[in-house]
Length: 303
Image (cartoon, rainbow, N blue to C red; front, side, top):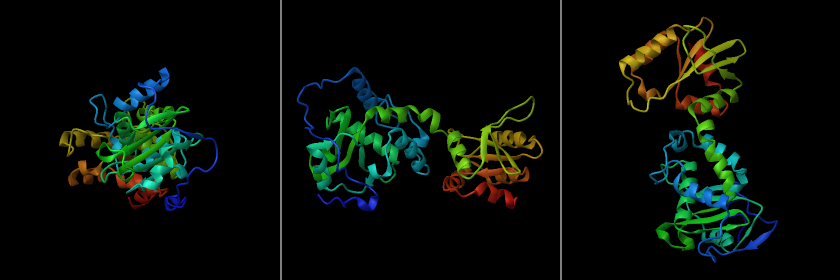
């Protein structure tokens, strides 16, 4: 096979180490699995977020296209994958399928996945892994989970939509971090830290207003509040007034910052917040900061 077939994506095929022959068809029925591996497969089959399972819970950030690189980067780190181990393609060449079909190098992990138009990278990974297990297109080789996902439940190499070769325990480590690391608070913290800010929990005292994060850089000081309103398309007047009242009590010398989906805010609410010298950060702003652009300073300088 042409090893340069995925080179434009930065992907590198394995070419050294221990290579073992295997079959995707299970010789023992059912598979003779360790207790730990059985639990891993059960979790990946029913409990991962955002899949078609009644046991699955929703995670908004995991499915967000705006922050898919942030989320997938966390999962990838927990899985101990490097960029050379991952490729997202529109189509998987049958030559690639054949390369992994009968024998594999057991030391390295690889992900070769297709992704639907409105699907995040992490959602694509979890969907493909779940489909592979549910349809039986997988096997365990030396604690390595090797699997394929196909359209139309066939094993036609021309209809393969995913190939993965992973240590599944590492994927579970990433999934267990969802509630701790893949949160709006962590997203804001990482974005700020990438642009040189010191970030810590805001220390509330007495009757002073409560905020989520205290942020500083040089002589600049900020109090950041993260707001998610999943039940509102437009923020009601009463909720908007609560925000404005809270920000109006901010300690002198500290600039209030609101991290919110700006589509929730009416123009009159935005204007009232601006009068209170409140800086509004939205999805686009946070993404710019994740790309190391200090948009907070830029907005502050214009105020």
